[in-house]
Length: 460
Image (cartoon, rainbow, N blue to C red; front, side):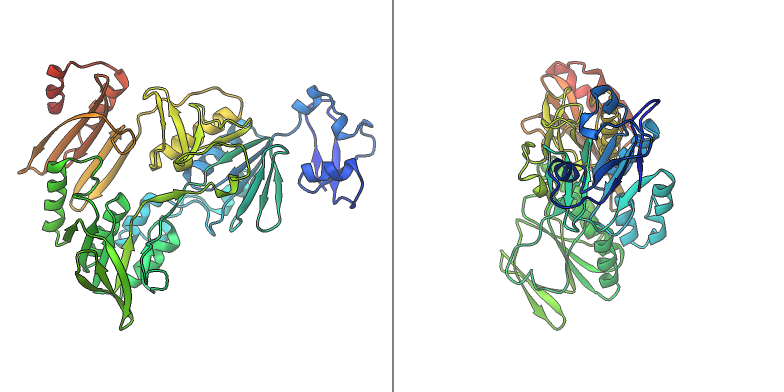
């Protein structure tokens, strides 16, 4: 049994499993997650549905968070700090507590042990009274009755709901891929563990895709001594962000590290060969490989919202407060297609830093705040022995931006600046990342630059 109490003079009830077929009480049981309520001895003789609005406002708030990545777990932690008495439920279909996805590439390169990948343990959740449900898949949400249902038969009533489920990697959809033994996506810790084990017994690896994930796989394969073929469908890596010079610089750096770069190339078929596989490309090339890494983008995880009125596009549509169009429902992290007042448009942003900020912001507003999104997002990554950083808005997020660039082939550095309505809104840097802070300040200033003034910004 449990007690629901709210402030001085609040009505108190305990709950028990409901008897079947008891009219109104049975309906309330469904609403409250299959629990019926009975009055404690000595409590005021009112049924819960007869409570005055003032009394209801004093009851314990029920927060449910779907997804325990950095956005969801940060939100749970922020909610607990802001509401010491609220009920917090954190649901994930993963078998693990929060781990650092940014640490997975170093883990794959044997630079970080598995123990260092984890950020939170069960004790953290217990100490903060966060009810954690691992390996639990949400099947649907009833936004009218405010209940989350799971495949395991659980029902979680909520007052405020946060969806922070991120995305799942797109599978390689070619003949032979589905049943091939050693074709891997790279999104989760279990993916990294399987890939790492296979690398240890391999000599040749193939990577397909022009994304950051594809780069991380190519670098990991090469760093652990595999002969590595990187297949990119387009004319260059990050073709929507880099122009021709930027693509050539990345190509130069990759080839210097021994990677075979194949552009305009995709996998057409995979077939088994001596416990490994052979990859047939669209150009007619056949590559014998011990494993294939796939970096072909993500599909957002919002299938369980199909029967709700929550609006979706690429992600779940929200306003600048991370609220959806359904009262009490929020979205954060990669899944949120949020309105950015600065850009005056909605977009998704799949970075660790952005997801962390989203978790704090969503929780603040779930607690009754009214704080809008006003960050300058960024992403920083290795690039073999170099570095790259994308700051602000880039054409993959907001097509049609004006751009200028400069490249220093000898120093292996590159800058590309993106403008909208005369304002600097984004930057891509390769090699020298020191100007990142200065460019971030300029973006925040919203200052307009005439075309004649823009070239000077390349020397900041």
